[in-house]
Every structure is written in C-alpha cells, then in structure tokens.
Image (cartoon, rainbow, N blue to C red; front, side, top):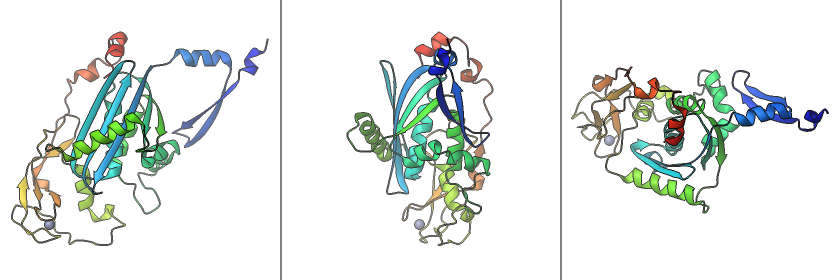
Length: 289
Ligand SMILES: [Zn+2]
C-alpha cells in the first residue's frame, strides 16, 4: 500500500549530454529492475609515475574479478606523471572483454576529480578547451579513456597513495619497474605535443621552430648531433599511426618525431574481439580479462 513511496531513492547521475547532474527518483520496483541489470563486479587499482616529470615513466594495473587477479604494466621513454596515471586506467578498462561494473581506485586527483566533477565532459564539449584560450592537455588519452569508460559502469575512487593500501603499492612498484625496463615504448603523442608550440602556451621558452629531419643535425636545444633510433616495441593495431624511427639527442635526451617516418596503420576489419561482441555471455563472464 503505497510502499513504494517509502522506498524512494534519489539517484544522482552525471548526464553528459545535459552537462549536469540529473536526479532521478526511483521507487522500489524500479530499483529491483536496476539491481537485476548488474554486470560482473571488477575491481581495478592503477598507478602511474614519471621520474623525473617529464621523463621515463610507467603505469601499473591490478585487476581483480572474484578469485582472478591480473597484473599489467608498461613503460614509456619520455612522458609525464599525469599521462601515466591516465594510461593505467585506460589499459585496465581496455582489458575487460565484456561490460562490467567497475570500481577503479587511483591516487591521481587529476584523473578522479576531472571525471567525478565533470570537467572532462566540459572540455570535450568545448572542443577540448579548458578555458577560452587554453587547450586541455592529454586530449589523446582523455578521448581514449572516455571511449572505454562509456562501455562500462565505472566508479572512480580516489585513494591516498603510499598509504599502506597493498594493491596501490603493488601498482606503484609495477609502474616504477616498467619505467626502468629496457623495452619502453615511445609516447608519440606527448613528443608531438612538446614539439608544437601552440599546445604549450605556458612554457614561454620557445625553441626555434626548425623541425628536425635527419640524423646528424644539431639538437635545437643543446646543439649535440642527433642520432636515429627505432622504437623497440612493435606498434599496436589499435594505433592509427606510428613512427618507424625518430631522432634522439644523446646529450639532453630530447626526442623529435619526423614526419617522413610516420606510417599509418590500416584498421583491421577482421578483428575477432569486435566480431564476437555480445555473444556467449557465459564465456565472457568466465574470461573477463
Ligand atoms: Zn639536445
């Protein structure tokens, strides 16, 4: 008899299209429906680090689903702390093979607050400008994050770093080890953003805009002769392009991406992970990652 009223619950969700919070009243019958429509519960811990910042960096991820546990990590040659924090969350979520309900723990305020306070959705709405003049940073990674974030039901939870949370500490160790590993990847998008002055409105120091093209040219920051290098890691099929080689300064460790070495990757239309999406739910549940 009107019991529903007593079980009314206010559900506050961020609505991307309306760019604001929407408060929905749910009575108990709707709640039962909502509870039925739950997905596998996954817990992800992530951490990222760059030492110095910017410098060599890495991310660490621990995924947990029931009794299953998986650890992942990756290292990059020249990147930033924030990029590695974002990358950890992206890689963790991208690993899931079916829609999940995820609690993702991170010690990065940059990641957690930007999402939970809705700022990243505003940046996207404003063509990735944070203010009228200043562009948002790490747009490539934010786009990748939002893409995979939208495929799951994700709750981001901030945890204090280095405060005794064993999974957070495990991620920290994974990230630091990856940052020192010999087969670090090149964070191409970061190097490109460093190279384009318009992106770096804050850094007043503007190096001459000469684009380096070949080996032996003097580094525009320190004048040492540049050498040619090839990334040690093979490009992933998910990338749109990669650089077959780049120029590296052995003295100041600057990296320069060269247009001539840019190679585009044809999208693989026979990707089995796309073709089987939604099929065989039980199979997916057994192997979420
Ligand atoms: Zn140099």
